[in-house]
Image 1 (cartoon, one colour):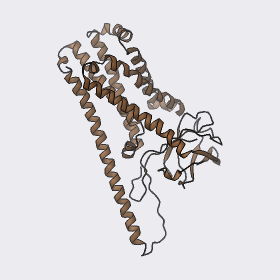
Image 2 (cartoon, rainbow, N blue to C red):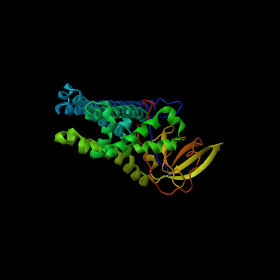
Image 3 (cartoon, one colour):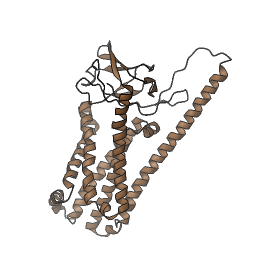
Length: 361
Protein backbone atom coordinates (compact mmCIF):
# COMPACT_ATOMS: atom_id res chain seq x y z
CA UNK A 1 0.00 0.00 0.00
CA UNK A 2 1.32 3.41 -0.91
CA UNK A 3 2.06 6.31 1.36
CA UNK A 4 1.92 9.78 -0.09
CA UNK A 5 3.02 13.31 0.64
CA UNK A 6 1.97 15.77 -2.04
CA UNK A 7 3.82 19.02 -2.55
CA UNK A 8 3.53 22.01 -4.82
CA UNK A 9 0.60 23.78 -6.38
CA UNK A 10 -0.95 22.73 -9.59
CA UNK A 11 -2.70 24.80 -12.24
CA UNK A 12 -5.83 23.17 -13.62
CA UNK A 13 -6.23 22.93 -17.38
CA UNK A 14 -9.21 24.73 -18.93
CA UNK A 15 -11.33 23.64 -21.93
CA UNK A 16 -10.44 25.20 -25.25
CA UNK A 17 -13.87 25.15 -26.89
CA UNK A 18 -15.49 28.44 -27.82
CA UNK A 19 -17.65 30.10 -25.16
CA UNK A 20 -21.12 31.37 -25.99
CA UNK A 21 -22.34 34.82 -24.98
CA UNK A 22 -24.76 33.28 -22.48
CA UNK A 23 -21.94 31.43 -20.73
CA UNK A 24 -19.57 34.39 -20.43
CA UNK A 25 -21.08 36.06 -17.31
CA UNK A 26 -21.10 32.78 -15.34
CA UNK A 27 -17.54 31.92 -16.38
CA UNK A 28 -16.38 35.43 -15.49
CA UNK A 29 -17.95 35.11 -12.03
CA UNK A 30 -16.28 31.73 -11.54
CA UNK A 31 -12.90 33.16 -12.48
CA UNK A 32 -13.37 36.15 -10.16
CA UNK A 33 -14.33 33.79 -7.35
CA UNK A 34 -11.22 31.66 -7.97
CA UNK A 35 -9.04 34.77 -8.00
CA UNK A 36 -10.53 35.98 -4.71
CA UNK A 37 -10.01 32.58 -3.12
CA UNK A 38 -6.40 32.48 -4.31
CA UNK A 39 -5.79 36.02 -3.05
CA UNK A 40 -7.14 35.04 0.37
CA UNK A 41 -4.96 31.93 0.36
CA UNK A 42 -1.89 33.97 -0.66
CA UNK A 43 -2.54 36.44 2.15
CA UNK A 44 -2.96 33.57 4.58
CA UNK A 45 0.34 32.03 3.40
CA UNK A 46 2.11 35.38 3.76
CA UNK A 47 0.77 35.74 7.32
CA UNK A 48 1.91 32.19 8.14
CA UNK A 49 5.41 32.85 6.78
CA UNK A 50 5.67 36.12 8.70
CA UNK A 51 4.39 34.46 11.87
CA UNK A 52 6.83 31.56 11.54
CA UNK A 53 9.76 33.92 11.04
CA UNK A 54 8.68 36.06 13.99
CA UNK A 55 8.34 32.98 16.21
CA UNK A 56 11.84 31.85 15.24
CA UNK A 57 13.46 35.17 16.09
CA UNK A 58 11.48 35.49 19.32
CA UNK A 59 12.63 32.03 20.40
CA UNK A 60 16.27 32.94 19.69
CA UNK A 61 15.80 36.24 21.52
CA UNK A 62 14.24 34.38 24.44
CA UNK A 63 17.11 31.92 24.90
CA UNK A 64 19.62 34.76 24.54
CA UNK A 65 17.77 36.76 27.21
CA UNK A 66 17.75 33.79 29.59
CA UNK A 67 21.51 33.45 29.05
CA UNK A 68 22.07 37.16 29.74
CA UNK A 69 19.73 37.17 32.77
CA UNK A 70 21.69 34.27 34.26
CA UNK A 71 24.91 36.29 34.17
CA UNK A 72 26.08 35.38 30.69
CA UNK A 73 27.29 38.89 29.87
CA UNK A 74 28.82 39.42 33.31
CA UNK A 75 30.82 36.19 32.97
CA UNK A 76 32.58 37.47 29.86
CA UNK A 77 35.04 39.41 32.04
CA UNK A 78 37.49 36.57 32.69
CA UNK A 79 38.96 33.96 30.34
CA UNK A 80 37.66 30.78 31.98
CA UNK A 81 34.19 32.13 32.76
CA UNK A 82 33.97 33.69 29.29
CA UNK A 83 34.58 30.30 27.73
CA UNK A 84 31.87 28.71 29.88
CA UNK A 85 29.46 31.54 29.17
CA UNK A 86 30.09 31.47 25.41
CA UNK A 87 29.77 27.70 25.37
CA UNK A 88 26.41 27.90 27.18
CA UNK A 89 25.09 30.45 24.68
CA UNK A 90 26.21 28.31 21.73
CA UNK A 91 24.51 25.28 23.29
CA UNK A 92 21.24 27.15 23.92
CA UNK A 93 21.01 28.49 20.36
CA UNK A 94 22.03 25.09 18.97
CA UNK A 95 19.29 23.30 20.94
CA UNK A 96 16.72 25.87 19.87
CA UNK A 97 17.61 25.47 16.19
CA UNK A 98 17.72 21.68 16.57
CA UNK A 99 14.05 21.70 17.55
CA UNK A 100 13.24 24.22 14.80
CA UNK A 101 14.66 21.90 12.14
CA UNK A 102 12.57 19.03 13.52
CA UNK A 103 9.43 21.17 13.23
CA UNK A 104 10.34 22.27 9.69
CA UNK A 105 10.39 18.67 8.47
CA UNK A 106 7.41 17.46 10.56
CA UNK A 107 5.01 17.76 7.57
CA UNK A 108 2.85 20.37 9.32
CA UNK A 109 0.16 21.23 6.70
CA UNK A 110 0.03 24.92 7.62
CA UNK A 111 3.77 25.34 7.01
CA UNK A 112 3.82 23.20 3.85
CA UNK A 113 1.01 25.23 2.28
CA UNK A 114 2.76 28.51 3.11
CA UNK A 115 6.35 27.56 2.17
CA UNK A 116 6.15 24.48 -0.04
CA UNK A 117 7.99 21.30 0.86
CA UNK A 118 11.01 22.06 -1.31
CA UNK A 119 11.61 25.35 0.48
CA UNK A 120 11.07 23.77 3.90
CA UNK A 121 13.65 21.11 3.08
CA UNK A 122 16.11 23.83 2.10
CA UNK A 123 15.46 25.71 5.34
CA UNK A 124 15.77 22.45 7.26
CA UNK A 125 19.20 21.90 5.72
CA UNK A 126 20.46 25.42 6.54
CA UNK A 127 19.05 25.45 10.08
CA UNK A 128 20.37 21.95 10.74
CA UNK A 129 23.90 22.79 9.59
CA UNK A 130 23.88 25.97 11.70
CA UNK A 131 22.63 24.05 14.73
CA UNK A 132 25.28 21.36 14.36
CA UNK A 133 28.08 23.91 13.92
CA UNK A 134 26.99 25.66 17.12
CA UNK A 135 26.77 22.26 18.86
CA UNK A 136 30.40 21.48 18.03
CA UNK A 137 31.38 24.99 19.18
CA UNK A 138 29.43 24.39 22.42
CA UNK A 139 31.24 21.11 23.12
CA UNK A 140 34.69 22.49 22.33
CA UNK A 141 34.42 25.86 24.06
CA UNK A 142 32.65 24.75 27.23
CA UNK A 143 35.06 21.83 27.69
CA UNK A 144 37.95 24.22 27.29
CA UNK A 145 36.33 26.45 29.88
CA UNK A 146 35.91 23.61 32.39
CA UNK A 147 39.62 22.90 31.86
CA UNK A 148 40.34 26.45 33.03
CA UNK A 149 41.45 27.60 29.60
CA UNK A 150 44.29 25.06 29.55
CA UNK A 151 44.39 23.45 26.11
CA UNK A 152 46.55 20.55 27.30
CA UNK A 153 44.05 19.69 30.06
CA UNK A 154 41.08 19.71 27.70
CA UNK A 155 41.26 16.04 26.54
CA UNK A 156 41.25 14.80 30.14
CA UNK A 157 38.33 17.10 30.88
CA UNK A 158 36.39 15.56 27.98
CA UNK A 159 36.69 12.16 29.63
CA UNK A 160 35.78 13.52 33.06
CA UNK A 161 32.67 15.29 31.79
CA UNK A 162 31.54 12.23 29.84
CA UNK A 163 31.96 9.81 32.74
CA UNK A 164 31.03 11.90 35.78
CA UNK A 165 28.26 14.29 34.63
CA UNK A 166 24.64 13.04 34.38
CA UNK A 167 23.41 12.50 30.85
CA UNK A 168 26.73 13.31 29.21
CA UNK A 169 27.37 9.81 27.89
CA UNK A 170 23.98 9.88 26.17
CA UNK A 171 24.82 13.33 24.80
CA UNK A 172 28.09 11.99 23.32
CA UNK A 173 26.20 9.20 21.55
CA UNK A 174 23.56 11.66 20.33
CA UNK A 175 26.24 14.01 19.03
CA UNK A 176 27.90 11.13 17.17
CA UNK A 177 24.58 10.22 15.53
CA UNK A 178 23.97 13.83 14.49
CA UNK A 179 27.53 13.97 13.12
CA UNK A 180 26.78 10.88 11.02
CA UNK A 181 23.62 12.53 9.68
CA UNK A 182 25.50 15.72 8.76
CA UNK A 183 28.39 13.88 7.07
CA UNK A 184 26.08 11.65 5.01
CA UNK A 185 24.10 14.71 3.93
CA UNK A 186 27.11 16.39 2.33
CA UNK A 187 26.41 16.30 -1.40
CA UNK A 188 29.49 14.32 -2.62
CA UNK A 189 28.94 11.67 0.06
CA UNK A 190 25.19 11.57 -0.37
CA UNK A 191 25.57 11.04 -4.12
CA UNK A 192 27.57 7.89 -3.42
CA UNK A 193 24.90 6.40 -1.16
CA UNK A 194 21.77 4.60 -2.21
CA UNK A 195 18.68 6.67 -1.43
CA UNK A 196 17.40 3.92 0.86
CA UNK A 197 20.63 3.86 2.86
CA UNK A 198 20.77 7.64 3.14
CA UNK A 199 17.14 7.81 4.27
CA UNK A 200 17.69 5.18 6.95
CA UNK A 201 20.81 6.93 8.26
CA UNK A 202 18.99 10.27 8.26
CA UNK A 203 16.28 8.90 10.54
CA UNK A 204 18.92 8.41 13.24
CA UNK A 205 18.85 12.19 13.60
CA UNK A 206 15.65 11.83 15.62
CA UNK A 207 17.40 9.44 18.00
CA UNK A 208 20.38 11.79 18.25
CA UNK A 209 18.14 14.74 19.11
CA UNK A 210 16.43 12.67 21.79
CA UNK A 211 19.70 11.52 23.36
CA UNK A 212 21.08 15.04 23.81
CA UNK A 213 18.00 16.09 25.80
CA UNK A 214 18.78 14.44 29.18
CA UNK A 215 22.07 16.29 29.73
CA UNK A 216 20.32 19.58 29.01
CA UNK A 217 17.63 18.76 31.57
CA UNK A 218 19.95 17.39 34.27
CA UNK A 219 23.03 19.62 34.03
CA UNK A 220 21.97 22.71 32.06
CA UNK A 221 22.42 25.83 34.18
CA UNK A 222 19.44 27.60 32.60
CA UNK A 223 17.19 24.61 33.40
CA UNK A 224 18.25 24.39 37.01
CA UNK A 225 18.13 28.10 37.88
CA UNK A 226 14.98 29.40 36.15
CA UNK A 227 11.43 28.03 36.29
CA UNK A 228 10.45 30.10 33.25
CA UNK A 229 13.36 28.72 31.21
CA UNK A 230 12.53 25.17 32.31
CA UNK A 231 8.90 25.65 31.27
CA UNK A 232 9.97 27.14 27.93
CA UNK A 233 12.30 24.27 27.04
CA UNK A 234 9.90 21.55 28.13
CA UNK A 235 7.15 23.18 26.06
CA UNK A 236 9.41 23.43 23.01
CA UNK A 237 10.51 19.79 23.26
CA UNK A 238 6.94 18.56 23.76
CA UNK A 239 5.62 20.59 20.81
CA UNK A 240 8.38 19.32 18.51
CA UNK A 241 7.77 15.71 19.53
CA UNK A 242 4.00 16.14 19.20
CA UNK A 243 4.38 17.58 15.68
CA UNK A 244 6.31 14.50 14.57
CA UNK A 245 3.96 12.05 16.28
CA UNK A 246 0.80 13.70 14.94
CA UNK A 247 1.69 14.66 11.36
CA UNK A 248 4.37 12.14 10.45
CA UNK A 249 2.96 9.08 12.21
CA UNK A 250 -0.58 9.26 13.66
CA UNK A 251 -2.37 11.24 10.92
CA UNK A 252 -0.91 9.15 8.06
CA UNK A 253 -1.97 5.95 9.83
CA UNK A 254 -5.49 7.25 10.36
CA UNK A 255 -5.82 8.37 6.75
CA UNK A 256 -4.47 5.06 5.54
CA UNK A 257 -7.33 3.28 7.26
CA UNK A 258 -9.80 5.87 6.01
CA UNK A 259 -8.83 5.69 2.31
CA UNK A 260 -7.63 2.06 2.26
CA UNK A 261 -5.20 2.55 -0.63
CA UNK A 262 -4.39 -0.65 -2.52
CA UNK A 263 -2.50 -1.50 -5.68
CA UNK A 264 -5.03 -2.61 -8.31
CA UNK A 265 -2.73 -3.14 -11.28
CA UNK A 266 0.89 -2.83 -12.43
CA UNK A 267 1.13 -2.15 -16.16
CA UNK A 268 4.47 -2.17 -18.07
CA UNK A 269 4.82 0.99 -20.17
CA UNK A 270 8.38 0.75 -21.51
CA UNK A 271 11.69 -0.88 -20.70
CA UNK A 272 12.14 -0.40 -16.96
CA UNK A 273 8.99 1.73 -16.60
CA UNK A 274 5.67 0.63 -15.09
CA UNK A 275 2.43 2.41 -14.23
CA UNK A 276 0.86 1.55 -10.89
CA UNK A 277 -2.91 1.94 -10.54
CA UNK A 278 -4.12 2.51 -6.98
CA UNK A 279 -7.68 2.25 -5.71
CA UNK A 280 -9.25 3.20 -2.41
CA UNK A 281 -12.16 4.86 -0.68
CA UNK A 282 -13.08 8.53 -1.06
CA UNK A 283 -10.10 9.32 -3.27
CA UNK A 284 -11.91 12.45 -4.48
CA UNK A 285 -11.28 13.95 -1.03
CA UNK A 286 -7.52 13.87 -1.47
CA UNK A 287 -6.24 17.36 -2.46
CA UNK A 288 -3.96 16.11 -5.25
CA UNK A 289 -3.45 16.86 -8.93
CA UNK A 290 -1.57 15.28 -11.80
CA UNK A 291 2.12 16.18 -11.85
CA UNK A 292 2.47 16.50 -8.09
CA UNK A 293 4.88 14.09 -6.47
CA UNK A 294 4.12 11.92 -3.47
CA UNK A 295 6.28 9.78 -1.22
CA UNK A 296 5.06 6.19 -1.52
CA UNK A 297 5.59 2.95 0.38
CA UNK A 298 4.37 -0.45 -0.82
CA UNK A 299 3.86 -3.40 1.49
CA UNK A 300 4.36 -7.01 0.52
CA UNK A 301 7.93 -6.60 -0.69
CA UNK A 302 11.41 -5.79 0.57
CA UNK A 303 12.08 -2.15 1.32
CA UNK A 304 8.47 -1.41 2.31
CA UNK A 305 9.61 0.78 5.23
CA UNK A 306 11.35 3.29 2.94
CA UNK A 307 9.49 5.92 0.95
CA UNK A 308 10.26 6.97 -2.62
CA UNK A 309 9.00 10.07 -4.46
CA UNK A 310 6.85 9.31 -7.51
CA UNK A 311 4.65 11.72 -9.45
CA UNK A 312 1.02 11.26 -10.34
CA UNK A 313 1.08 10.59 -14.08
CA UNK A 314 -2.66 11.01 -14.65
CA UNK A 315 -5.32 13.33 -13.33
CA UNK A 316 -7.16 11.70 -10.38
CA UNK A 317 -10.71 10.70 -11.29
CA UNK A 318 -11.93 9.96 -7.77
CA UNK A 319 -11.67 6.19 -8.31
CA UNK A 320 -8.03 5.61 -9.25
CA UNK A 321 -4.60 7.14 -8.80
CA UNK A 322 -1.85 6.39 -11.28
CA UNK A 323 1.87 6.78 -10.74
CA UNK A 324 4.68 5.86 -13.12
CA UNK A 325 7.87 4.29 -11.78
CA UNK A 326 11.20 4.01 -13.53
CA UNK A 327 13.71 1.45 -12.24
CA UNK A 328 16.50 3.79 -11.13
CA UNK A 329 17.34 2.36 -7.69
CA UNK A 330 16.90 -0.70 -5.54
CA UNK A 331 13.45 0.25 -4.31
CA UNK A 332 12.07 1.48 -7.64
CA UNK A 333 13.31 -1.67 -9.35
CA UNK A 334 11.00 -3.76 -7.16
CA UNK A 335 7.48 -3.79 -8.52
CA UNK A 336 4.60 -3.37 -6.06
CA UNK A 337 2.90 -6.66 -5.22
CA UNK A 338 -0.72 -7.48 -5.99
CA UNK A 339 -2.74 -7.70 -3.87
CA UNK A 340 -1.25 -5.33 -1.32
CA UNK A 341 -2.50 -5.76 2.26
CA UNK A 342 -3.70 -2.78 4.25
CA UNK A 343 -0.91 -0.60 5.56
CA UNK A 344 -0.10 2.87 6.80
CA UNK A 345 -0.62 5.56 4.21
CA UNK A 346 0.58 9.12 4.43
CA UNK A 347 -2.17 11.25 2.99
CA UNK A 348 -1.27 14.27 0.88
CA UNK A 349 0.09 17.39 2.50
CA UNK A 350 1.33 20.65 1.04
CA UNK A 351 -0.32 23.27 -1.12
CA UNK A 352 -2.69 22.21 -3.84
CA UNK A 353 -4.79 24.88 -5.50
CA UNK A 354 -6.96 24.73 -8.53
CA UNK A 355 -7.80 27.53 -10.87
CA UNK A 356 -6.14 29.80 -13.42
CA UNK A 357 -4.95 32.24 -10.78
CA UNK A 358 -2.91 29.69 -8.84
CA UNK A 359 0.87 29.91 -8.91
CA UNK A 360 2.61 26.78 -10.15
CA UNK A 361 5.50 25.55 -8.04
